Image (cartoon, rainbow, N blue to C red):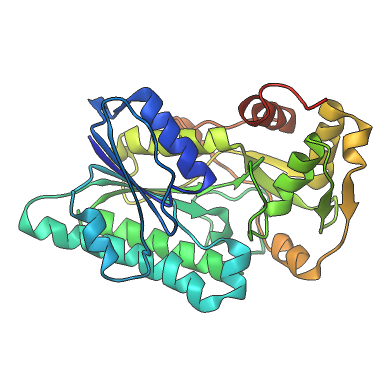
Length: 329
């Protein structure tokens, strides 16, 4: 089994790699090779019996995709993206990476299949940002896509391409619309949704965090552990049951910022909550207000995808996975 992870240097990519290495198997076969690529070369990974290759690439370069597909990976995880806030601020960069880079990959796969049959499983990380207001109470897989950000537009186009290339038999695609992943470890990035993690992550270790939106802001969340589970299940599942509907809302938890803060209070107390500083930001608030609040993920759940049901559980996962199982004293 030969695996390619694009965007492997990011948090989800690192955790996915660790999971694959620990298991050593995917789709009932032993993993022989994992290629990890990103705009910055991912860190080397030790893996007994598995060849791990790391390199820096720019998927916006039309010449790169063919080199990535040259080894004919059986499973491709496409995680690379310019995140929402940066894609809004840098129009050209967002389209170059999120749209052009994705299409170059699809085309490289199609061209590789001309010489001899080739149809890899392609797991595409999409986003709930493909949907735009006005929203129903819960958004199902078939709700119309009217994104209100460049990032959402780029991901929606990627979904359409994934479905069409799968329909034509060039690849075997599964598009997973990720909830906002929370609590993200590490430092804040340029995602407009980053504060959802920082208002929990920083106070848990005694640091201040900035809240740029109202406590009434509601959003859809899942943990990094759940995200890795989504990716692995998408790689393993029987795609014949998807038919033409290749893109799925992932399960998650709908919660307000206020509900997040109350979960933090239950876990870490009032002193942690006091570290959250209100600093309203109009651009962030407008973007968040244009995002969907709640989803119908019953189709994905019926297909075996799983996520958390409370923010207490999400915080507990972060403490277990990132803080050694207990809060700093």
